[in-house]
Structure formats: C-alpha cells, structure tokens
Image 1 (cartoon, rainbow over the protein chains, first blue to last red):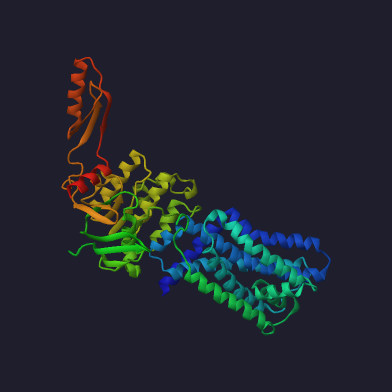
Image 2: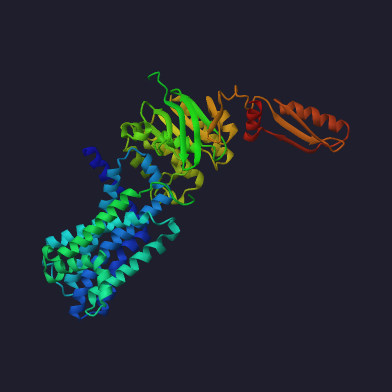
Length: 250
Length: 284
C-alpha cells in the first residue's frame, strides 16, 4: 500500500511539472477564469450586488475549467498520442496513476479558488468566506463531480483536433445558462428548471452561500443531491468507457 | 534461470466480432532466445504481441509469459518485461533524461539512466524536450524506456520501422547486445532481412496463422536467391537466381562487354517477403 502512495505521489509531481511547462494549458485552464474575474470586476466595479454574484460564479467556473475542461483535454490528448497506452504497459498501478492526475487537477482548483477568495476580499468588497469549511466541502464535491464528468466526456471525443469543439459545445451553454439563471431574478421557469438540473448552478449557489451570504451546507440539500447524482453518473461512465488506446482510425 | 520457456503460447485465437485476427497460433520461446514474428501488416503479429503484453484479452488458447498469465496484468510480471510499442507516445514537455528517470522508478533494479541514454544514442538529446526530437530519436527513446527497468523479456513491435539504414544497423547492434546479456526478445517485423539478421528463430505469420517456423536458414528463407534480371539480345526478360551475385554479375557483364553489348534493365533483387510466402505456400 505505501508503495502505491509513493507511486501516486511521483505521478502527481510529474503532472505538476508537465502542467507548468505547457503554456497554453496553463493559460486556458488557469488564467482564463481569472481574466473573466478581472474583466467582470472592472465592468461591475462599485456595484456590490453584482460583485456578490460575480465572485461565486467565477469560483464555480474555476472548478469546471480546472477539472471538466482540463481533464477532457488531457485524457484525449494523452490517449490519442499513445501516452496512456505506454503508461498502461508500465508497472504503475492504475489507482496510483489516477490519484496523481486527480490530485494535480485538484491542486489547480484549490489555487484558483484561493486567488478568487483573495481577489474577492482585496478588490471586490467581499470579506473572508463566512463559511470556510462549507467552501472546502463545496469545492471538493464540485471537483469530484466535474472531474468524473470530464473523464467520462473524453470517451465521447473521437480525436484531439475536435476536442475544443466538443468541450465548448457543452461548456459554453452550461456556463452561460448557469450564470444567467444565477444572476437573473426574471429567468424563464423552463431555463431555471434546466439550470437547476445541471451541476454548475447548484455548485455556484453553494459557493455563494459559503463565500458571500453565509448559508450552511445543510441549506443546500437539493443542490447537493443534484451534484451527487452527476458525480455518480460521471464516475460510472468514466470507469466503464475508459480507453487507454487511441480511438482514431478504429 | 529455470528451464521453462519464457513464452508459451498454445492454440491462441483472437476475434474482433466476426473478424478472426489470430487463428490458432503456437509459439514457445526459450529464455535467452531472440524470436522473430515475421509477416505483412495485418497478419496478426501485433495482436499476438499485445496479448502477451497484457493489453488484450484472448478469445481462446493458453498463454504463459515468465510463468504468468499476462491477462491478469500483475505488477510483478510488468516489472520483468519491457515493451516497445508500435506507436507509443510520450509527454511532449518531458526530456529523455526525465522520462527515463521517472520510468526507472517503477522497477526494483533499474539500469543507470545515463548509461541507457548513451546506449540508445540519446546522450546529446538527454535534456531536449521530446517534442523537439526527430521520429528516429523518439523511436530510440522508446527502446531506452523499455530497457531502463532491466527487464528479462523485451517485446519489440516493429522497432525499426521508419529508420534509415544507418539507424537500423545501430538498433540491430543494441538488440544483439541485449541478447548477449541473456535477455529474451520477441520481435515483430515485416523486414525479412531484419528477422534474418537478429532472430535465432522465426515464425512466419500470415492471416493469423503461422505458415512456418524455425531458424531462418532452415526455413529456406534467403538461403539462395539473389535474383538477377536483364533483357537479352532478343528483348526477352532473363532471370537467374544465385547465392553469389558478385560472380554472376562479373560473368554476365564481362560477356556482354566482350560482345560489345549492353545488358538492358539489369537489376539485382533480394527475395521479398512476398516471394517467401509464395515459396512457402506453393510448397505446402
């Protein structure tokens, strides 16, 4: 058992090193949400009610980009390039490999949330999170759900060239819909129904409770149930459909 | 070393739906032996090797690799084998030295990373990111990564495809040096001369079956037959087979020059794999 932990730790360190060496991945998975935060913050400057909505929205977006988007890209890339196949043949336990990959994604999420919290406090008039433990819990729950969904979604992407199209076809509608419903008091009922059934809006509402309004985890049981359901579906599909080998040309 | 074979395969079959990629293959590879699976693309070589490596499950038959069933994918077995895939990728932002150091950490008794870099001829590129390496250099890194764990048994799936002649010779030297260290090697190739140059024994595979197996010489593969062809004085095509093309060419060209003629369309060809198949199947 300790050996598997050592191997997982080595994989984690490799993942960190590879992440920072790839400038475009570092940009899209890391800086983009922060640019949205800066731009949104500048536009909404002085309007505290809107800033209160912006900060948890960007926190939710950060969870989704660092897990769902990043993992879908990575898995497809490594699969189509034959890296996964090579890893499959090495004496590296599958659990250690995925632990390293998941821990690296979680590190990115945690770093981004920390930056969003600091920016909220120092730039956007939002204090320290009133429910820090809930914040941690929401981030963990969000990471589990969106990471599983990202790995599962990678199975649907046939080749690396089309990854951006596939990912954005899911990512953009979910983000716009969730942001819109979260921000608007007059969203049509059917849009709200759809957004409530997707995992991002419940996550943003939970993060808002933990970071801004001071509501506890127990007040968001419906949202938690939705995210847990997505996590279960995502995990099932991620494990069931996983392919270590390139799908292109088959 | 025990006397049990490194690889034993009996009645191996593999289906993909209706398609039968492997149809009853039997192989036994002794420890320390270099065994070649020779055949054209689509013959079932890679499917067979990937079953032995633990990538694929078999549809039927018995398979033992170093005393293990590879389908179980035990860590213990994977620590004792090295794999050169036909198309294995590597992280684009890693250097060969980092990749080998990382890989070495999987194994109980790895080789020295610097030595392996030199052996693979990558000493000069040790700290270059892999995305800047040429195809040939990446292929040598594949070989280095298969060797760094100091495995007993090494699978090489078309290790020199795409190499220029010089790089191929260098790879052959490396493979011979592995045999000298007592390693067992299973090699697939569609180059006849590669199988002849390296393998102690060869199995010729086509359509998922073994057509013939044995030491390359005994198979009659390349025992004779350089084929020398030219147009005779009447324009007819003349073909002659020989073991010794130098002497024959000297004779032919000498005679032609003495007559003040030229040998039109003169060519010397080695037998192709296709010739060998024709020979084998027509004899059967």
